[in-house]
Amino acid sequence: MIPFSPPHIDKKIIDEVTKVLQSGWITTGPRTKLFEKQLAQYCGTQSVLCLNSATAGLEIMLRWFGVKEGDEVILPAYTYSATANVVMHCGATPVFVDVNASDFNISVSNIEKAITSKTKVIMPVDFGGYPCSYDELNALVLKHKNKFSPDTQEQKMLERILILSDSAHSFGAWYKGKRAGSLTDVSVFSFHAVKNLTTAEGGAVSLNLPIPFDNEKIYKELCVKTLHGQDKDALAKTQKGNWRYDVVEAGYKCNMTDITAAIGIVELERYDNDTLPKRKSICTKYSAAFSKYSWAQVPVLKSEFEIETCYHLYALRIKGITEAQRDAIIKEIFDYDVSVNVHFIPIPMMSFYKNKGFDIKNYPVTFDNYSREISLPIFYDLTDEMVKTVIDAVIKSVEKVIA
Image (cartoon, rainbow, N blue to C red; front, top):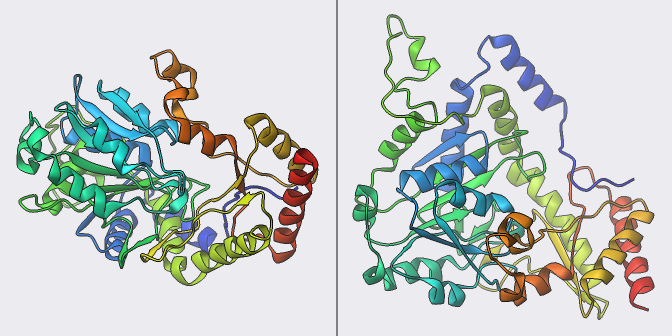
């Protein structure tokens, strides 16, 4: 069976993790702090905070901005549930909008229609690693400054809607000469086991807030907020006579450990010259093969406007089929011992959100994209022979079902 997306764990990673285990320092410490600095340099931002998940990063930034009951957060209907769940955790209302038919990303024109005086945050999602239209998004929140109704000190300083990018998929992507993480106010990455760069579990918040914000100061505030509100972490307390600490707020517990950061440091070191070229090669082979068929709608990987995915997903769509036919095609592909997936079941189709009154019929492009989408395997150890097996399995399965 060809798996869908196993992690690439080699001797170098095992050796680095072993060093951490033998060091006597396994929680947040020197490796986590080094990883944060390396990520900030890579993304071209001032400050990056590493946490135990992207979900924690999204929620902590909503809470930092003061999002609460009565507020609205705009996000795409086509995303993973975490994007919406964090809004619910804050007591705010998720406002779903439809996506583009071309690249799966949130529609800027639909966002504009959804903005009200209650809108505090827009959460675009870089589906599959392909960046959203950040020039248009950044211009949009300035255009609608007059609608913004600030409540907290942070909101009054920004004087407009915050853009909090769910960049879970897009670490390493490019947008007009800039890397993901530096494209808007705040971006949050995922380093989950299936992501291009993994720390097993983990995530990072890339801070890129405009003047008058001090991103390094905010980083320090978030360090406190994400460690129980404690004003010193364990590393700081190891300094001679520095044991005393205070708890200044009822914070959260979502710090990254040095064990997981050690994996990330190795992954980052080889990301641009090894991981990304390998993933790009696989996606390019898929597109070359499927573009020959009239039934195939291949994903956008690179645009003429200097926008390039980080090749996290290969989201193939089959033209003119129903959801049931898509499911039948997937079953056939699995019969060839090839694992595929679907990204994602839209949030308005999930029971919790349906029970809140959301209806997928209000998001026709989202449903159309979902109903025809099949995500194909991409991982470091996927050989050329395996790629050929995947391609043959897809072609045979599609033609059997739609014949």
